Image (tube, rainbow over all chains, first blue to last red; front, top):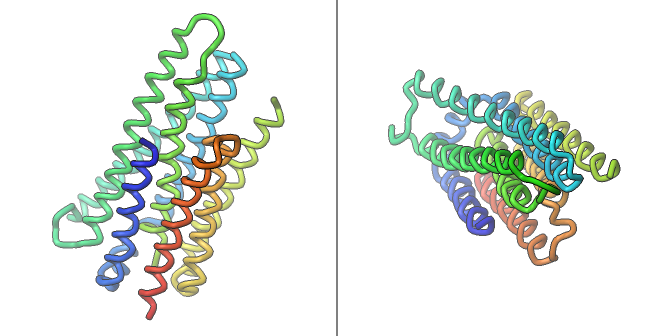
Length: 172
Length: 91
């Protein structure tokens, strides 16, 4: 699944980069309207969420339930913070009258790339939440396998954003 | 045990620092002025962050080489494709 997700996003990133070639002025002008600070803040949130989930995996292997749930909760909250800031960004764009399918190819790509990625963040949050419930209910020595799988998906979501951020927000 | 935690903590701090550098370069307008060199620096930082996520967070450093190579290869390929497209846009 990870390979398929990665391949899909690679195609989308490549399509963005090569479509930009043919609509250079539109992409340059439109990209300048995006807030680099908001993109960087969201990068920091996702990186921190990934770090917390990685620490939760270690704590689970160490059989420290409290620490594992604490790290997992922190990772979930940081990921939820990403969603809040992303939705605020969409609201700002909507208030400026910038939507999808409004004839601006850059913003069509912007909504497809960031929206598809946001769906993955939401799926990751669901997986992490269910994993936390499972961990809290486990009896005996903690098993890390489910968390390792959910964590791998979550890190992939982080990895994709690490390319998306400079491509969509920083490129000039 | 502490050693394993320390690697994760240092990796996280290094990636936050790299993000801050990208933010400063992008916000300060240097990326736009430096053009291909600017994008090369920004995507080199993104590639390094991706490498750290793959090796340390996904723990593929200790996984079968096929998985590690596939992910690092895909990351490298997409970064090079983006830089190629950017380079072509400057012609």
